[in-house]
Image 1 (cartoon, chains in turn yellow, blue):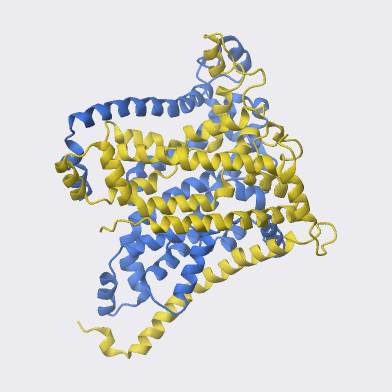
Image 2 (cartoon, rainbow over the protein chains, first blue to last red):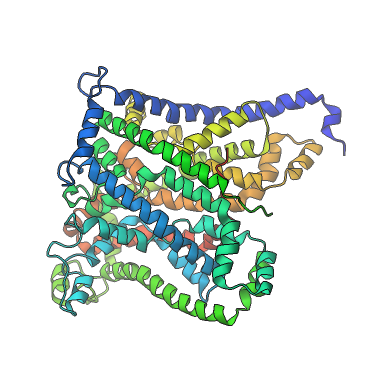
Length: 311
Length: 298
């Protein structure tokens, strides 16, 4: 067999290669320009347009400021932006500081083949594959006044609030956070499990021969080895900080008097039901300007943690 | 190879400390797994109650009351009774199906191709585009749906069903980029070189050699894609209101569940779980071991 480079001139082959590259990249690039860059540019312009007249105005930013400085009463359509921001940050911190550790520990023990790990792995992923509506619907019945949890509490002389846990601003968001944590294990299970399965088994053998225990193995061996995956996931979570939240629509629907709104749900409601596109664009722009430097700084810090190279 | 790894002594032989810890973990896992299964079983049992007098039974005997007779016909009724505006359950099922097919063929192909090209080829502008993609993935962007709706409407794509998904679904520079880039980065280029030696071109190397090698990981992504397409409804609420899929239809119907009969509605919910449960049952192992993601270092 002869190398084709001997037959055809090199530049002809390179031209064909470039045709292949740009031929296949052209459509995705055009799509990216249209659905990412032009949409963002349009959103940027909208943020500075008066919603009624379409002329240049800062009214949307004034309304954003008003909504952020509105007291935490959760009244008004989809609640105040301040409530939304507070709840979003709550979900974010719960995600990073509670859900991630839970996911890592669970994946570690599944990887270490705890008894029944195959069936556990299957069951733990169920919240990720089942329609959210099905699980949320049952969860809502369980935490309703007169529901199974209420009946259980009554055995000990306690009971849930008369209007349930999801109607009051004092308990609604925390109840949804409990739901989110309860169903969180599946979250990054695929990527974390995949990262652990790629760890060369010889490393674990050496660690075993050194006599290190499970805790040391997890912290000093597994975590550094899966760090490239983990750090990427954490950065992506930080990038989606403004999208953090639970299934608010399924839990409290349009009843925003429960004070459960988040940034993403606030945007959802304002866009879909109120059609306040300009206000939503201005909000998005303000949030991006505020959070972008924080995330870029965080990314820089994460990059400084050295990753362990192995094949 | 994987079997050999699974059977390695590190996994099979446990120290005394590990045995104790694993026993405690087993109990915790068991309780947690039970808590996840209870809602599913509860839904199944409730779906088999007679519709007539269901609320009286719940009021009298509580939420864990067993059905007096097993009403399997609730599942048949779910198909006929459940309707949202002009779309019945079969229509919703059809909407879910076309969305799944397009999302996991047409919309999946492009990110795979883009990931492959960026992982395996060098060309002018590559570094710039790569850095730009990483930058856009790091910038938190929200609130653009209003702008998107305006553009989509101006282009005549609003509420056009499959046409909208086909037009907007050509991607490759989203978060999937990192995954497909990492998948192909991990494959040796020498396989493609042997195709070139045999006289094959770039597309031949991609489609006959590199793509099949990446298939385990891509099929894992495909399974998660099918599942999320089956459960997704937000995109339909924003852009495709006339073609509700099963997930959205069931959400709309949840508000009038009592009117269609709660057990019938529960039957609908159970039915919406069955397809994804079957797919997951066959693919769980592949999904758990085959996925990887690239770093964000630009």
